[in-house]
Amino acid sequence: MDGILTAKQEMVLRAIKSCYLKNGYAPSLSELQKKLGINTKRGVVNHLIALEKKGFILRTGEPRGIHMVEEDDQIVYDYLIGVPIFGYANAGIPLVTAEEDNLGVLKIDEKLLSKKDGLFSLIVKGDSMDLATLEGNYLKDGSYLVVQKDATIENGDIVVAIIDGCATVKRIKENHDMVVLYPESSNPNNMPIYLDRNSESIINGKVIKVLENPII
Image (cartoon, rainbow, N blue to C red; front, side):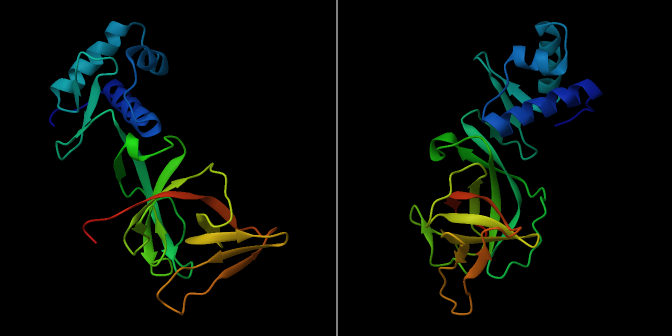
């Protein structure tokens, strides 16, 4: 990549990235024109030509044929969904503060995900769920979790909960007055967490996919 982007080109690039992260595909010319308030489609095309010349995108003749080019020159194709990594989920005592960090974006083939919207990723930290599996994949330290925020939660699901501002991942069991977050661990020191149903703790989403981190 080379060249300095104008303010308008930066807006166009951000709009393209935002569409990829939200929908898993590139915006159309009409969508960019409307979102950015550009008078004509030709004006949009001119910005895309400039972005392509500067190495930030590649274009094809297909509908929505805009492909992002990352800094490592790896193309983000339109069948890949970008899932932002927001931080860590404690598989143990909730210690790491649940702050939304920008740790990058997972690029996942849309065929691997049943949902595309409302997704984020966390990295497992600890061993309280090292015997738990989802679709045959263990929730071991360093694994990536793909979490759906608006999922229906049922007993036995693996969830991410926010307790005193800290994120933890556990299986959930609910009854009329209590929520139990319980581990599945090789470490006997990991114990269940018992919560009143009316506590200020938040179930932040359901884990729908576990992905191996090959560098851990």
